[in-house]
Image 1 (tube, rainbow, N blue to C red):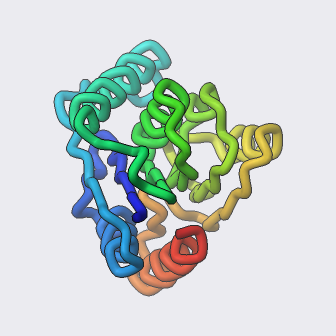
Image 2: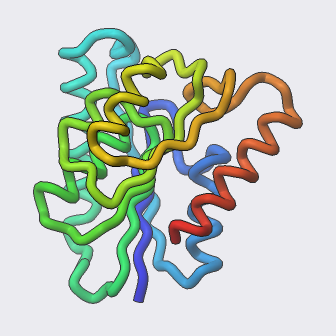
Length: 180
């Protein structure tokens, strides 16, 4: 049996393209999928390290509550897919509970790398307004995390050009398919 847990972002829920198609893909590959729901965040967290830490802790608490009855031991393969603040929560959850999961980090934040980041792959847009590209590059190199970059893409891996965004979504989804 295989399990995929989806850790959303503050404003990027599981029905948005990157997470929606990741979950759909995982289901098509035989995974049980648990899409987490996060709420109750302070909308003024951007650029404020203290508020980001509080938001990350809030996301982890919500993940813990929603995964409390999950028996991870029955799965031979576990994948966590996190988006933004969800990347922090998925790595922190994995570390806290010793869950043997590989992690897909969609638009990770610098704080993401405060937890162990082995068996991870990251996706980042070079115009991400929440994470400095050079900092993410350095952190991925330091922690041996493969990084896929998308030129001029924002925190949703979008550029504003519909066809570019569709090609990016396809590329990300194909890479996730290989990781699953």
